[in-house]
Length: 142
Length: 142
Image 1 (cartoon, rainbow over the protein chains, first blue to last red):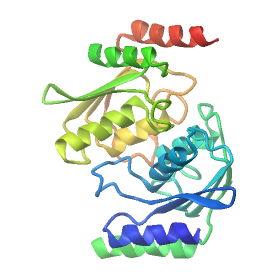
Image 2: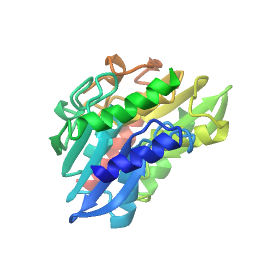
Image 3: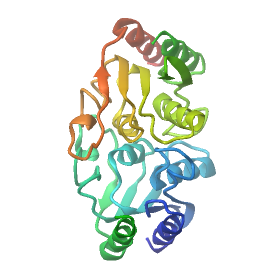
């Protein structure tokens, strides 16, 4: 989660919403990404989506069955469903996101009948520091 | 929708789940894509995601506010949320998808409090022909 936070800090410095994500396989980091929706002109370029794509390229598979994903913010519904499709084994997320989250809020993607893979989930990890970075970002822009 | 169906046929011939998507702007097609999860080794490479990315690159914006998206199958929750983020104006889809759809089934993404943009929606367009292509694909593989 510390490495995911570092990725979020890069996003912050790039004027992107500061969210970072890391994927591990056999205790090694195989993907690290941050939110780049502005830089890539791509509304789907969330940290988790980019990390899933990077990890799949690295491992040469579209199924990340032995991988864990660490992300600084509760994934949105788009990313939650992507995590399910990728068969990620374990999901660790930082701050909760009542306005946009898709795990503990809104559609609760992993609880739906249309969801065919649910990872192990740990939320609220290093919640304070991860939330503070987001609050600082949005406070600057108000 | 006819052009989206042609894209789905290309997917079928490529042994990909046959779903095709097209995005229009000012009555012109600006993006056409088909599902390429296998070819790209990317579980997020659904037709709609690829089409959103292509259209955003073409128009140089991450907001497709004046665009319509045509897709042969009811979008999954991942793609539905991506369509919302992209601010697509109108969504036309073909076959309904009770097992994996995210519009009329499962999480009903656009009805959630975490969804901040809902397009106009028309479902079931050329439903028979779009569903038959999918059924033929899965029948071959059983």
